[in-house]
Length: 247
Image (cartoon, rainbow, N blue to C red):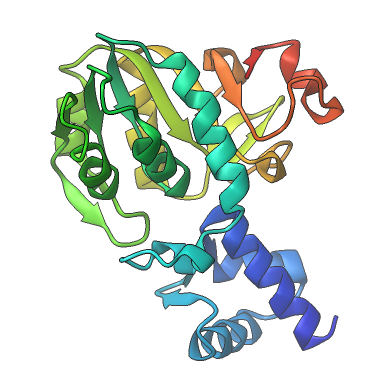
C-alpha cells in the first residue's frame, strides 16, 4: 500500500471513530508502529489530525469547533433532528458527548422543559443556552481525548440518579457484539450511564454499524432505539430492526 493510501485510510478511521491507536493501525495496515507514528506525525504537521500519546484524534475535538472539521456533519444533524422525537416535556435525560450530541443540544426547542444530566462540558454549554432546561454537569476528570468527564466520581454520581432516557453515541455497533469502544475509561462511564437509564437510544452514523472495537460496553438487547441518518427501511438496518426500534 502506498503512503498516500495508508494515510487516507488513517484519516478515515480517525474521522469515523474520533480517535485511533497506533497499535491498532499497525495491525490493520500490516506495517510497523514506527511507520504509523511517522504517518501520524506528518498528518499532524499538515493540520489533518491531532497527535496524542499512542495515537491521534479527529480535528473535531479542537475547541472552538470549526464547521469544516466535523465529519459527516449533515448526517449528524439529521440524526439529532430524529432524536428530538424521543424527548418530551418533563423528562429527565442523560446525554453523552461528541459532535452528534452537540448538534442535538443546539436543536433543543427553547420552550422545552426538561432536566438534563451530561458528562460533556461542551454539551452542557449548548444546553445552558435554553432558558427552560435544567442542566446538571456531572463532575470528574476531564479526558482530553474525548472531551468528557471520566473516573470513579462520575460513576458514583450516576449510581445516585434515575433517568427516563439516555442518549449515547458509539464508536461501533453490531448485532453480535452490541455497543463496543476502544477506551476502557469510556466503557466504564457508558456502562454506568446505561445502568441508571429506563430507556437507551444509540445515535450513530451508518458507517459505524456492523463494526467492532476491542471492548464491549453492552449487548444489543440493552438498546431500545437506534437512530441513524438512514430511512428505517434501508437494507443496512434490516437485521437491527429485528432486535430494536429504528428511528
